[in-house]
Amino acid sequence: MPAPRTLLELEADVARDLALTAHPRAPWLEAKTARGQPVLDCLVISAGQCGLAVAHALRRDKVENILVVDRAPEGREGPWTTYARMRALRSLKDQTGPDLRLPALTYQAWHEASFGRDDWERMRWIPKELWNDYLRWFRRVAAIPVRNGVAAGAIAPDATDDGLPCLRVATDDGDLLARRVVLATGQQGIGGWWMPGFVRALPDALRAHASEEIAFEALRGKVVAVLGAGASAFDNAAVALEHGAREVHLFCRRAEPMVVQPYRWLTFAGFLRHMGEMDDPWRWRFMSHVLGLREGFAQDHYDRVIRWPNFTMHAGRPWTGARALDGRAVVDTPRGPFAADYLICGTGTRMDPALCPELANCAGNIATWADRFAPPEEERDERLARFPYLAPDSAFVERVPGETPWIGRIHLFGIGTTMSFGPAGASINAMSIAAPRVAAGVTRGLFAEDLPRLWEGLRGYDVRQVELDAARLAGN
Ligand SMILES: Cc1cc2nc3c(=O)[nH]c(=O)nc-3n(C[C@H](O)[C@H](O)[C@H](O)COP(=O)(O)OP(=O)(O)OC[C@H]3O[C@@H](n4cnc5c(N)ncnc54)[C@H](O)[C@@H]3O)c2cc1C
Image 1 (tube, rainbow, N blue to C red):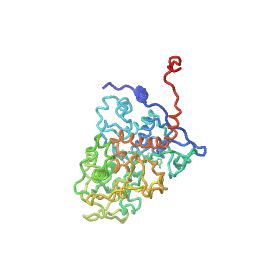
Image 2: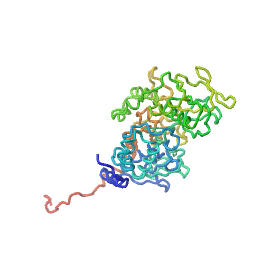
Image 3: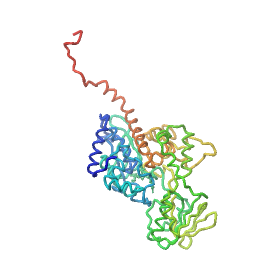
Image 4: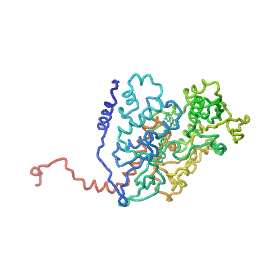
């Protein structure tokens, strides 16, 4: 492989690669307005890695009248510099992601140009801050149009001046109009962070979810109890230990903590590309097994906590209740109560569209797997049945047809797609396959609606590619 050079030279390579692979180059969409206001072809809600990747895929297909909005300031999108408490990504460093397989746009190309080939060779895992820096670089050189500090609110149906249906999206920067919306709002994007109700009922001073800001300095000398045995639970336990917590106890529901990573098994092209095309029983069987196992923690997460003598892991000891007592939290467990000064829940998210402001006008009519598929008794899982049941173009499907037909213009990209398509948006390993698929869902819809205009365009097409010699035409 040729040695990397400077970042400036790499950026020149990016421009050249984008130009060399720009075919088909012809613009094919027509600007629309509604009551004098421009209508975007697509609004992407979120400049996290999924939003950026799908915007890049759309631009590659010449859907350029798009906008990406994110409520976070630039550089603070997603978990990487906010609530992620791991040191490095768990994805293998050579996975491709939002680059969509353009070599000069890959993380590796950026890393080598920024820090040198040797540094790349030495690095085992990508530090999360570097991944964030890379995403910022990616968005700049891929020319993704992003407006930060803009929160999207409720989506509602509207129409363009020439009668095409479109969507109106309330934002704190005024309403935006778009023919299609991609909702890529992250792990909690189709519901919310979840913790047991009895923990949520405790005073704020006694508990937090792992996704929240936590004043770890205040935990010095304290006893901290963490619920969950996924990567985030371990990371939060580690940070508490590193901030001088007296004891940290991690409680795991399973008797045998989960030590395999099913996402490693399924990272092959057949699965990533085609699982979403399989019939419901197979999709349910595979994905409910994977999500039922939950995402295991990696060796580094474990090593980071196990070196502390004041760390204890309680396997097979779920929390069944909790109460506040004398300024402390007491959790009930099958092996008796446990008192701690502070509780942290690494318990992930729950699907519940009713919690999403963007879906305020349609949450009740979004079909879920529970509405569409009855698994065999031994495969039932209420948590997973709440995942949205998505159309092949990754758009929402109506629970009651005809009540909110416009939700077929909202395409989901994120963890909520997992039951329908496999690990589509929630992880880097699937992105180079999943982002173009979501973008294709958007372009398919735009194309189908434009057929009458395109038909007129074809019939009126009169660009001559040959100048005939009139004198030589027989019959003249
Ligand atoms: C702690 C942690 C570690 C992870 N580590 C890895 C890993 O190593 N490898 C891997 O493959 N995956 C990992 N993941 C999973 C996944 O890759 C990340 O969650 C990733 O950030 C998902 O990208 P995203 O674009 O879907 O969402 P995010 O990166 O979360 O971006 C969502 C964005 O949406 C914005 N937003 C939300 N609502 C609105 C709104 N209404 N209007 C405007 N903006 C809005 C937010 O501000 C945010 O910037 C990790 C997840 C977590 C939580």
